[in-house]
Every structure is written in C-alpha cells, then in structure tokens.
Length: 254
Image (cartoon, rainbow, N blue to C red; front, side):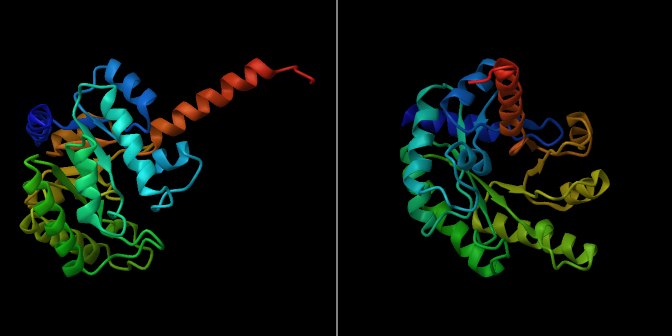
C-alpha cells in the first residue's frame, strides 16, 4: 500500500499544463509490458480496447470481475502507476473504485454518460457519484486520481456549439467541486477551442488524440495536461497482427 500511495502522488504530479502526460492506452499485461519498455511514465487502460481484447464491446458489457482481474494482472507486470478506465463506474461506482484500488490502481476514469445509449446523466447525479468515489478513495489512503470524463461533445442532439462548450465547462467546475482531479473532454478537437477550455477549466485538461489530431506539441502549447490515445493503440496492434497473419498464410490452401 505504501508503494501504491507513492505511485498515486507521482501520477498526479505528472499532470502539468503545457507539459502533458502522454498515455498510450493499454488493454492487458502484454501491452502493459510493451508500453512500459517503450519508456512510458505511467499506464492507463482504455475500456474499448479492454472489451475488444476480451471479445465483447464497450459500454460495460465486460463483467466487472473480468475488468478488475485484468487490472490486477497489469499492475503485477509493471512498476509504473496504473490508471483504469471504469467507464461510468458500473452499478455502484463507490464499490467499483474500492475494488480497483484494492487491485492496485492509482487513478481512474469515470464518465458522465449512460453506457446503454451514451446520453448524459443529470449533472447533480454525476456530482453525487464523483463525491462517492472521492470519499472511498480518500478513505483508502490512496490519493486516487479521479479523471472525470464528460461526454458532452458526443451528444448527437447538440445544436448549439457554444452551449455545448459552456455545458462542458459547467460540468468541469462542478466535478472539481465534487473532488475530481482532472477533466477528460473527448470529442473536443479544435485546437483553439481546446485553448479556451484549458484557460477556463479549474482542472487539468485531458484530450483524446485521433488519427487527424495535431502533434502533441500543439496541445502542450495551449496548456493541455494529459493526452490519451484511446482505442488507437489496440487498433494499430490488431491491424499489424492481421497483416502479419495474412503474409504468413498467403498461398496456404489447407
């Protein structure tokens, strides 16, 4: 536990505006070893990739027991801090974070949308859930980094980009008051909008990189504190595996 407490403090210290922590998201013990060997400062799972590696889809379709067991195997093969993507926290986010900390996690992602359809939870409900998670984490003695993810920019019925931006900022402020340590805003991709969000956010900002994203230096320039690659590493690995298998099996007739 002492080692875990130290890693939690180290992980939080890596979130520096303008010098972002880069998380090349992993999905199992093997990918954890590979990214550790590449020189990473910390590791973080991505729920989409973990689900895909287990033959299922994202959205809490993977049983929590499997997700926690996978986390424990990852923690066992690396000396780096490990943050876990807990999606929306499953049915009981307080119990879920307790189990994650017991398995060795020093940070987590908690999102504010319903896994069934991606619609947003009421702000007050999500604030209560984050407070629960904060309370359990504090009681454990591990300064678990709560990365509050908002899915405002993924809402299909959003008609006014300015209102969408303000809604995300309102949630960032509310989540900060509830005890979150960072705000994750996937779907926010325009670099100038990101700069505006960073300037107004009370929390370190986490941005997800996509295939057409600018280089990490551009995000550093506007003060982003954390960059995540999401499902991209898994997709790249599976594509390479498929190509290698195609080459190996080329011409095989039986």
